[in-house]
Length: 312
Image (cartoon, rainbow, N blue to C red; front, top):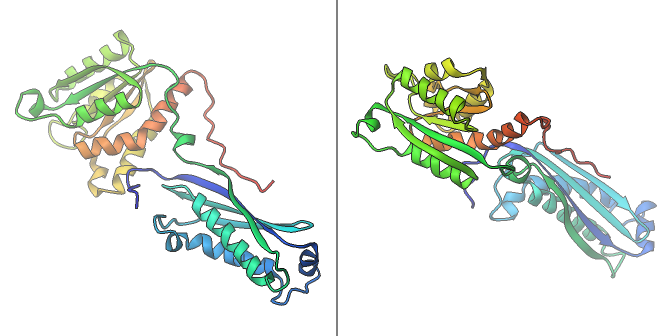
């Protein structure tokens, strides 16, 4: 089973369709209520819903997904019955397999209830019509070159008594995401020096993104939030809240992080924890929104991806 623990929850939707071919006489029997086992459509609807909910028990590598909605509709044609299954969930993985499983089992149920009437009965197709809400919808790549800096704040590392791991992780991850990391620096937990460095990044170098790591806790030398607050012109509280909420699902101590985030001019400054794990979690939680923030700064609307699906 694939590890999805680093993913964040999004609204996932999928629609699948299955077509059962049959003779016109069989269709007429269904419409007239003359099928020997009764009307197959309501039974198939229940079967589809149950199958969608039990997909992880049927398909070995599927995760058990807490479904929010399963909708089932039928179209009765001249020589076929088409079932369409729509599934929604707010979770870490897509729900296309749940929709496909529901459609498949509904088709099998229709087949089972009509097979004694029609030797030519056949499940003609099962296919995915659409899916939304995954990484491709929310985590769009950078559309223009963005210049970034990584600032490590640590008395221990700056004095040579320790080794930086979180800053290098952030630097490498930003490079993989398409950022040009023009500066990677380690300085002590000194409030004035931190503020001066952030101002230089924003006012003189005019960087797009500055990520700090370290000094966000409640220790006597943890002054990063205070230094950052001095230079921010527009605080974006939701960024820090999202990072803490994401980390809190894994580690209860995440609530003690006091990191802040916001804008100075058009430079986005984000505080992340000093631990390697905390920095990695912060990047997982925030990078899609950080990349979207640059589009907003250029005037793009703050619309969400279109996750609403219809049966039309």
